[in-house]
Image (cartoon, rainbow, N blue to C red; front, top):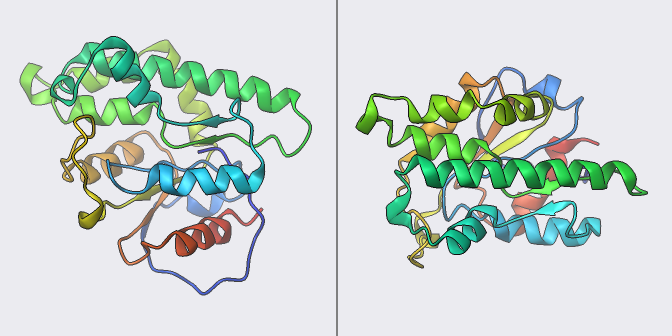
Length: 217
């Protein structure tokens, strides 16, 4: 989620694990990667977008859900490389359009997204055992992803933890909470700075304050 926010004096909240590059990331644009299903991605992004007055051109949301509906995929297709490639390409295309819009628009040039192309890599990796571990690497090696990786490394990601009571089966979400470890591993392996926001910070006001605090811009 590419974002520029005002700093606010708020009570500190508990954060879990920060990558070594976090302090360098604060000097750059802010990006937030919101992890597995039911971690409150949309719940957090919508009010942030409203607060910043972002247009739909620079607020990217529900890309994976849209791809699944358009192409007829379900959560039972998560293991298919075809589905993850389609999601990755759609996300990267929206990222590119948003960067163009932000560069042309007056104002702070903010881009906000509730996920990144790393999501597709993570879900491909979770199913890599079925074909010897090549799915995630196939996505990572694509020229589109490699180009985006430079941008992601200059951004700031926050990985939200799943909240058990938020898990709702709507037929589309993946309810597997075990993918949090894979998000950590892939963000680290790809050299993307990130911090983790744990379950002790579950209320919207707390999470908004935490984002503003760590943005420091």
